[in-house]
Every structure is written in C-alpha cells, then in structure tokens.
Image (cartoon, rainbow, N blue to C red; front, side, top):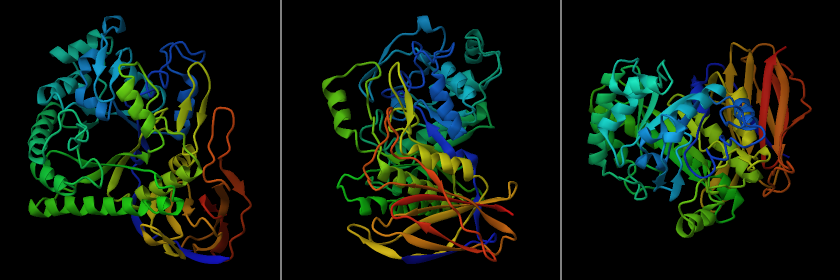
Length: 503
C-alpha cells in the first residue's frame, strides 16, 4: 500500500475560520423558494407556509448566512413588489430565468424563515436595471428604525423593529453577458463606489461585497478586480468569487483535480486585492466572499429547454442537478480549499440550498432528502470551526489528462481550542489505490483519535433519492496513537473526517 505522511503543529496557523464560511444561497429560481422552502399546501408546512422538514435539514447544516434573492434574479428585482400584504402583490415577468414570479414569498417571509432556521440574510441589491436610489431605499426599509418613508412602510407592513441586515452584495456578476444591465469595468467601478458610499451614510455598520469576476475564465479576469477596486476600495469590505465545476468529459480523475484551479483562483484574487492596496498606500485589507460555489453541469440541457421552449412558468424545475458520489468528493475538495484559505476567504455560500443545484431536494407534496453533497458540507460545518492549521503533507501523486501530476491527498486541519478538538479533513482522490496515512500530532499533548468518518462507494456515479440513500458516511474503527503518532487508511476515492480529542 502506498504511504503518505502528515505532520500537524499548533504553530502552523493559517487563520481563524469565520463562521460565515458555511453560508448558502436561496435565489428566486426554479423550485428553490416555491415548492422548496415554501409550500403552504404541504402536510408538513407551518403557519407561514414553510416546510418544516426542509427547515430541519437546513438547521442540521448550521448555516449562518443565506444570500438572497439572487443571483441573476436580482438584476431585475423590484423589491417593493415583494413586501406588504400578499393579496396586494402582483406577479412579474422574471427575465433572468424566463419564469413568472408571483411575489407571494418576499423579503419579509425570507427574513422570518432565516430566523426560524437560525441564520441571517445576506442581501443583494439590484445594480443591473436599477441603481443607487433603489439600493438606498431598500436599506432604509430594512435597517432604519422609523420616522422616514421606507422605514415607516416596513412598520406599516407589520415589522416594527428593523431587520438590521449587516451584509450586502452590490449587484451580481455584473461582467456577464447574460446579466441584465451588464456593466463595463469602469461603469461598475463608478456605480458600486457611489452606491457603497451612499449606503454607508445610511448605516455605517453594514459590510459590502463588491462584484468580482463571474468566474476564473472570464476574459477580463483579473483586470476586472483591479479596475473596479480602484474605484470602490475605500467603501467595500469584500470582493466576490463565483465558481462551478463539472465532469463534462466524464474524466473523473481530472474532474477531481479541478479543486487545484480553485486554489489558483483564490490566490490570484488575493494578489490583485493586495496590488490595489499597495497602489493606494492603504492600510485596509479587502477579504474574499466566495458567495457562489458548487458542482453544476448535470441539468444544463433541461435548463435550456425550459427557458427556451417553456417560459413563464411559476417555479419550473430548473437547475435540479442530481449529484453522484464523485460530486460529493468534489464538494469536499472545494470545502477543503476554502478552509485552506481561511485567512482571506471569510464568507462563502454553497449555491444553492434547496432543489436548485442543492444539497437538499424535495418532492411537491412529498418527501425531502439529502443529496450526496450534503454530507461533506455538513461535516465541515460541524467540525470545521476554530483555527485552520496547514498540515505538512508528503503524499504520492498521480497523472491526470489536463492537470498533469496532482497530489493523491488533499487535506486541511482545524483546531478548536475551546472544545479541545482537532479535525483533519482529507480526500484521497486517487481512484485506484488506498493509502496509508501516517499522522504525527506530537505538538498536541495527550490527544487521541476519537472518530474516523468515511464516505466511499465503489460506484462513482451512485446517487441518493427520496426512496434510497446509496451514498452516506460511516464511522470506522480507529487505531490508538503511540506517542503522538498514528496511522489510518484512506480508501481510494474517499472523503475522510478524522477527529482527535484530549484523552
């Protein structure tokens, strides 16, 4: 059996995990809202029409922030249509996904739902078809105490105390040809600067996220980041990154190597932010909000057919990727990559949360269930709170078609000093061979392995459904440490969570 070695030391600190790294995303897209989190006629719906079975699955993930209402949807979002008495709200053509938006679920309902699942909204403003004034009006509606037009409108709508939303996105993917109101770098730089300046006059306590490139392969990346930040650097707090991966070539080994591209993406954005910081002689550091990330490719043809040939439906089944086992490994690899960069990536949103490229799926009037990708995200959220440590890892490698030689093992460790817990997250992305991992944790006195959680499957294409769960984690027997050293087997193509605690 091949061998690998990992040394953990409490001095090898990367940075503290911001709990918002485990955020997610609900967009008015497909069945994410309607017949997803909101289904008034469902037998398990509460008095608000919220599906309680879905809420329980969301609460299990412990998601601290949820981005809303988009996404592409936000670039033609008229927030006034989504507030006030439901019977007075009017439907609107939703242009991003060519659907019909009934507006029976809006800002107030979302704020109530996030409160019930123990989360906070991450609100986005429309800088596509609208602009500065509408962003300010929305902020006034949400956060101002009272005595003004829009704060009094909120009070009239039954919400006396402000929503007090602290995190705001300045538009969405404004460099994309598909985006309503697409902007050039200079246009978005000026608009975001002036919007941010105005919003912080209304509420200086908020944090703002500037739109970065829609994904790494955009033709203007990373010049977009450099140019837009030169305008808004003094007023924003984060810049966004979006990235989705898929196995379109059915090359599983190369597919799992794409997490290395995500690492390159993050490092490039960090260096661009720091270049602007140096150019401005600023003492302020811009951190990263990776507020869209996931696997997305299974449902592309269905999406094209529905939006082209069957438009203007309410909640059509769009972007309903059914994830398999190798997708779960990819999500685990992406989560490890985010943790490895926790010193600069402070916010991240798994996109999305329910039905739409999501870890949770539902049937109309029926069951809800966990997709394969649910589990690595759950484990990271549960065990990945604390200080990220960079393991020193000596790992074998294997050859891939597009990425050349890549490491078999991709890993990161998190030390939770308060709980006296160390967790190693590791993926063996070698599809052919098991590995013996020798762990050296001698810098941590008197620690032992408490649990080794493994998720593996002989069929990389295995999926879960409402009827059967073929992909799920199990706990395996753990060896005892000898003077701070121990060995575990990482099965080929496996997700691993190795938990240490005080003896």
